[in-house]
Each structure stands twice: as structure tokens, then as C-alpha cells.
Length: 398
Ligand SMILES: Cc1cc2nc3c(=O)[nH]c(=O)nc-3n(C[C@H](O)[C@H](O)[C@H](O)COP(=O)(O)OP(=O)(O)OC[C@H]3O[C@@H](n4cnc5c(N)ncnc54)[C@H](O)[C@@H]3O)c2cc1C
Image 1: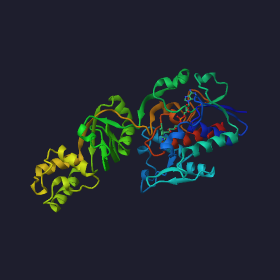
Image 2 (image 1 turned 90 degrees about the vertical axis):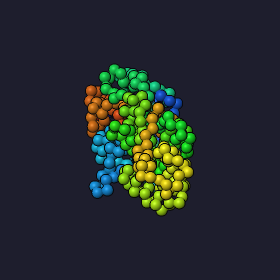
Image 3 (image 1 turned 45 degrees about the vertical axis):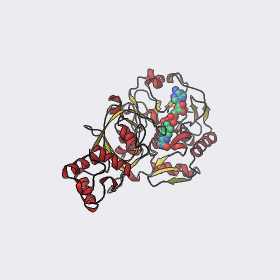
Image 4 (image 1 turned 30 degrees about the horizontal axis):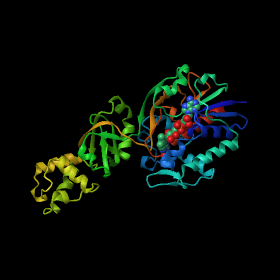
């Protein structure tokens, strides 16, 4: 009879345990959880609503219908692509629905329980753990993995802020890629921009000059800098670069996601149609009037200038600021909604089909402890379900 220790009772650990007992009802499966309860993080996911997966509609190649996973998983996209053949986002939907959870897909592809209550996911998993007979040991932190009596160990201890969190793996010699946070907001120095706190720009493209890092989407101006989907995505794509730069670098904002020529053409047309109006009162799609006024000031143009008075130099300057407006990032800002770790167990250390440690047969990894992380949108939990399922399947086949 197999005896299996699961270290960590979060999304990946609980999912793996349930799948193990479904496949191997006679196996002894024990979850060791450091905290006093299981699934504490799942309970607060998605602002308490639990964005448990995604339809991937925004990340599919329109010709081939293949998921563009490199935009979703900045770390681990190749492995995730392979593992989706074992347990895909559609499988996640079927799995939860087959266990009685009704789901809804929002316009942006994010999938939530219809109850909009993360506790429904927690309760469903907890009930299944009970029904299948998984042994639970809460308040039980594992400090040395090799001390555990079980022959098979599944490490699902989640992301960590420092290497200390992985000390229990020290004797295994398993290589970790450096850790740093992902999914955070940016602190900027520009006071004028920050004074627009609460302003939303609908169609921005953000980039870090002299790098390949770029993201598009809604930008929210905050009293410390920027937030919103475009910022969080860029923080994920550039997580390691930003950490190495000590969160001090430049951020270029293209406020309208057009190139400069397109911006010039739009400006010329709008100005020609509004010759008698003040420049500050014209409407630029996707920009609030406060933001438009900020852009006019950045272009060093008088606020009370009329459209008929604008010369071509000023038009050029305006189009430059609209499409390439650069600010200093001075630090990592706050973001309480979601936070994940970039880095973890190096994917070189594990078998890509079973997630078993190459150096230590019998030790498996699932969830955020692996060097896999995603942008926001349900993709991180999807990685936990997929890797947890993969490990259970692999152990059944041993
Ligand atoms: C506030 C917040 C909101 C989020 N919202 C979403 C969302 O809506 N959608 C989404 O896809 N992702 C979301 N995420 C990310 C997602 O929650 C994680 O990626 C996911 O929970 C990872 O699952 P896991 O099982 O790998 O780790 P975790 O859920 O972190 O579980 C790891 C468990 O291991 C335990 N543990 C650690 N060390 C030990 C040890 N030595 N011994 C015993 N036990 C140990 C921990 O106490 C913990 O319970 C959110 C994250 C945060 C912080």
C-alpha cells in the first residue's frame, strides 16, 4: 500500500490529495499543513470570489485556436502547455461542475463560482477530502522533508518571499531559481500624475525602455503611481528585471496604444474639426479630460490655447507625449488583491511528465513552489490544479 505525504494544504496540495484518493482509494494520504486550517489562501482569492480559472479567450491564436501561453505564464509556459494535455482549463471547469459548483465566465474570460463566494470552493474541496478519507494534520510544519516516514512526498508549499521558506528542502540539493515578487503596482516619482489618482486610461501600452517588456490594457493612476491590469501584467513580465534593478527604472506609457503617426493623424483631424475650441476641451478617445490636460501640460503647451493656434511643432510634441510618455519608477507599490512568487524549484530539476524530482525519485512538486507563475486572471490557480492533478496521475502510474 502506498503512503503519501502532502506538504502544504493549499490549492495544489488539496487538489492532489483528492485526486490521489480517487485513483488509489487504499493509499494512505496525509496532508501536513503549517497553519491551523487548509486552503487559507484560496479563501481570499479573487477578492473573496475566487477566480479559479480562465477561458483563455484573450490568449488564443485566432487562426490555430492554440493558447498563447507565453503571454499568460512568463515563467513555465512550455511546461504548462505540455501539462494542459493532462489537465486543461476545460477539465477544471468540468471537474468543479461535476462536484456541484456552478461557474460563470465573465466578459474578460475570468471564471468564478456562480455564488461569487471563494468559500464554496474551499467547502467543496474540504468535503471531498473528508469523503475520500484524506488524513489532515494542521498546525504541522515540516522542517526536514527527509524525516517524513511516507515513501512518497509531494511538496505543495506555495510561493515564498525568501529562500528561508524552502529551508526544509536544503538537504535535497534541489536547485531553486532566485525568488522575487510578481504582480505588484508601481511607485512613480511624478507628483502631477499621482495627483490624478483614480483616473483610468482604457487603452494603454506600457513598456520599460531598452527592454522587451511590454503590456497593454487598462491603466489606473493611484496616489503612489500606477495600478490596474496593464501595470500588473508588466510587473509579471518584468518581475526579475525589476527586482535586479531594485525597482528603479523608467516606465513609458503610450496612452492610446497607437503609433506616433496614427496619433498625429487623429490629433490633426480632431483639431481641424474643433478649430474654435480650446485644446483642453477636446475629447480624445480613452482619455479623461483631467488626463488629457495633464498630457497637454507634459507637452509644454498652454492650457488655454485654441485649436486654431496650434503649430506643427506643438502637434508633434503632443503626439510624442501621447504615445511615449516616460516616468521614473521609484519602487514597488502595494497590491493587496493578488501576489505570487516568481522563482522556486527549477523546472530543470523535475521530470516534465510527472513533476518528480530527477535527483530524488519519490519527491514530487506541484503549485507555486515550482518556478511557474502567471499574470492575473485565474491562471495561477489553474497552474495549481493542473500540477496537482499531474502529480496524482503520475503517482498512480508508479
Ligand atoms: C490575495 C491573493 C489573491 C489571489 N487571487 C487569485 C485568483 O483569484 N486567481 C488565481 O488564479 N490566483 C490567485 N492568487 C494566487 C493563488 O492563490 C496561488 O497561486 C495559489 O494559491 C497557489 O497554490 P499552492 O497550493 O501552490 O500554494 P498555497 O495556496 O500558498 O498553499 C501552500 C500551503 O502550504 C503551507 N505550507 C508552507 N510551508 C509549509 C511547511 N513547511 N510545512 C507544512 N505546510 C506548509 C502553507 O501554509 C499553505 O497553506 C491569489 C493570491 C493572493 C495572495
